[in-house]
Image 1 (cartoon, rainbow, N blue to C red):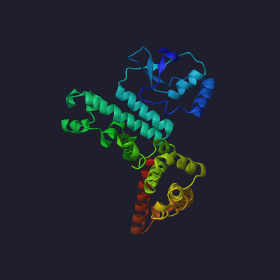
Image 2 (cartoon, one colour):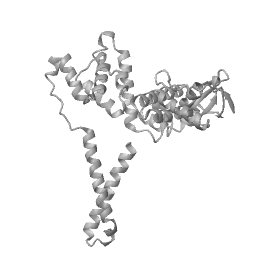
Image 3 (spheres, rainbow, N blue to C red):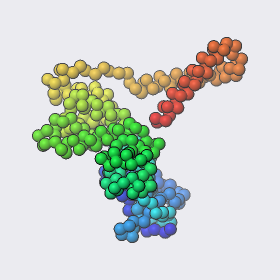
Image 4 (cartoon, one colour):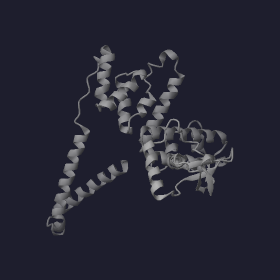
Length: 322
């Protein structure tokens, strides 16, 4: 179907003001379109309000086409419900933002808001649409969720690409925001809340989690967390060490009661050592590969293949987490 670009709107569940389009990716797409032409990789649904169309996915391509001053495209248009639009947004966020804290938080917050609102409309399990009903085994589970959708329901909605820790971390941030809103003004700096912008400024969820733990451990006020996060990223400091030294300067009396963090070896150095070991093991395995059928000791053979099997399970687990 041919659609004018001026009649296309973003996915209603994707907050483009908070999660801006990546300029580098848009430029790469512009180069590709100039070199090979436009390839249909955008999905739309009709908007029920103004006759326009809403993007299911393809926000960077949409921006690239607009910057190239292309007026009209031939694109797929399907009738998609809100649940499907939200799931598509979640998958696009994971791809665009590589599971960053910002992408994880945005997605989990939107899913919780959507599911809470949908459940509030329904009086019974049977009255919900199939996308919502399938999240619950029976009426009892549905009734529990109506009091507030939790981690298990959100995970089931998002699907297998999402991990339990992703949803849990995001819900922790959301609960802290709600707690801060309810606190009286004089206590907002003392309840240990996390600055969401500082937390989301980290590139990975593991670093953001370490930042949250360090901020709590050393009682870093929310007003100081953004500056601390910038300092950590600018100097590539250890997160807990940087939080400790920050607290030592700003809160010397409180910090005296807390032991300084243990300085751990560089994670990059540790990973480099593992890479060297992997290369060595690979070379050794190649050398003995042709001789494996001639192992005489049953005990040696059992130990060898048992070790390989255990190693493969660990590698598979690491790859799944990646």
